[in-house]
Amino acid sequence: MKSHRVITLLTDFGNEGGFASALKGVILSINPNVQLVDVCHQIAPQNIFEGAFALFVNYRFFPKDTIHVAVVDPGVGSKRKILCACTPSGIFVGPDNGIFTPILDRERKSEVFEVNNPKLFLTKISNTFHGRDKMAPAAAHLAAGFPLEQVGPRLKSWERIDLPRPKIERSKITGKVISIDRFGNLITNITGDDISCLGNVDSLSVRIKKRVIPKMVRYFGEAEKGEILAIVGSSNFVEIAQNMGSAARFLKTKIGEIVEVRK
Image (cartoon, rainbow, N blue to C red; front, side, top):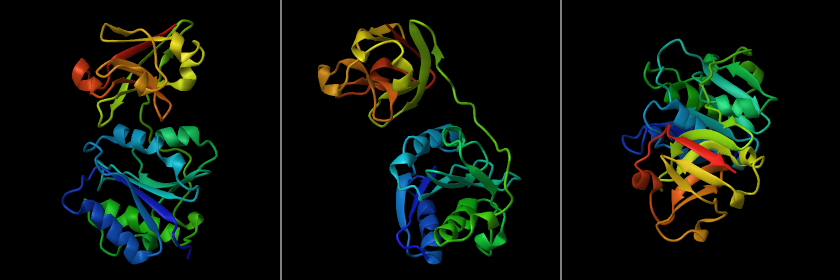
């Protein structure tokens, strides 16, 4: 058994009610030698896209043998499969509902299995808590060295979610707000790589809700306190923020708002 292997947990359970703690208890009962890390338990209930995005921007910062458990599972108890995706950057265990779409799009050299070997599950299985009874114990056994080829059959296809892509033109890129963080920063689906074709960031302007931000900045301190700014954030996505404030509240903006980056 390998000691101190990392297992991360991402759920929509919140921090109340003990649901996230139940996952940890199951894992540690099977394999007490793992190191558990909470990625996030505040994903909006049943919001698969939000869970997919949160895991996508975080997983590459963990050791490459990390096992990531993602439980945003509105289809629990149905015929939906449980996946185990083995990639060069980690192993991912979760429901087959598209939550691993952006990761599997990036990690091309991947193998995906259906997790259906009863040896990996608890003896008694609830119809409403597969995260505790199937996914968490499967991750614990995998961390202890359970062979991947024995988790279940290899899959050639799996469920996907629609990932909005920006429209790239010669002089502008059109995208949308896909996430809002706890600071009120508006995170778009436009990446730093996308805008590189337009020129240096200080030569670009950003438009949202008829408001034009005349120049992108490289760090928050380049803007005055309370000023609305545009920046390539730490996850390499273009963000709209308010220095020392909330852009989402100030601009009264929601997810889906159109954003343009222009020369």
